[in-house]
Length: 385
Length: 131
Image 1 (spheres, each protein chain N blue to C red):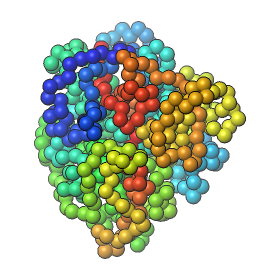
Image 2: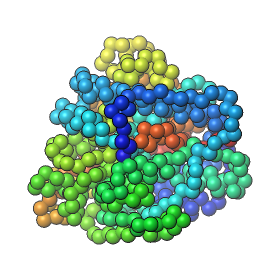
Image 3: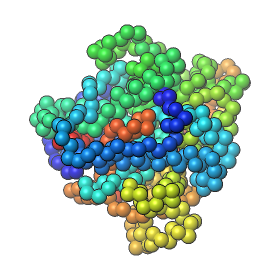
Image 4: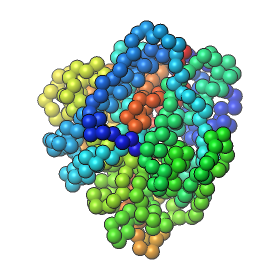
């Protein structure tokens, strides 16, 4: 794994905007950054990233199966009891997952370590699947990178294939917070891939989802929502006014309700408990577990529910070195062993390892001057050399 | 979605790790061109959503992959109760929040019979949902 500075394409902004990637620059700061790229060998990709990603996904599915059959797990994850039947029914019905992203720490030498699993509402998939690939093609054409370069990236094709398995006759509604540019971009991209798979689609704001008198969720045309992709976390849906209607409404959701288990940071101590000393896991404990003391005075503190690094604190030798502010933490915290991100040219990269239909199929990289990746971290492309 | 057998779903599967060193030349991780059907023909994001908030799209049958870059989907749109706002990614703390929504409680706007606004209130208070 290397970080290689390179010239940027002089027309990349226009290229980005031509495909709808309008959030390449945020508040005047680069979000997409191609002044450098990360290079991997194929062996690194396959043995150090792809295989561990599949292994972690398998462990996570194992965990969900246990949690569904043992309420002790759901209680430890602070999932409201009213929604346990919703989760267990979706699991037993085998409601399918579309995608997810594991965030990994990898230094090029040691085994990749799971930092967290964005299992419910991962974003940055358009950049990973499309714009990163466009960079690779154009960078090879323009001799910015070697012509033999490749990329770990079949996200786009796998999304289309996975949508096809839903059956082309179904109407898919996609709902999220459309006044957020990044979320709207993610929804538009997933709508695009679903359309290419032959599904009829409707994109709508999550607040426009209606509740009909017969208990069905409906769109703005009062058409029943049979299958819905939601870019809106399950824990927020549980909290919202219509949350109480989720169990009785016939809508099938993507990601499915059982993903509420895996999007919870509490899976980190549960995985460590189930698979102690697994090479891809970091020691982790619930904060109220006396075993948390085994981590000593250096650890990362994470709320059970958190997005974009919010309320994550990095504690070293008892001192909080860094903490992202945010609204989370009421449900409790976990502590994970401190595994400082590797530094490449004074930048801290986090690897996003993408799964579509449980299959590892792509890589994205966010880097920051700050060792906690947040919503201002930059997206850099990668290549296999 | 994938039709998984009872034996497969939710079970750990063996992960095949290729032997090293690999004798074969690198296999391409990507097989073909990335084509977009809708994006690029519409703007994306809040401004676009304000113009075309309720996009109903149906792909034409027998569309060829070579023509996917063109706007060959049949999409209709109409106004709704959504209001888009100028946006960048938001922070939790409100100073640069892009949300112009204020969904509190439910209403029956946009429909004669359905209640609306029952989802989104928590999220709009925070500002973004992805991670």
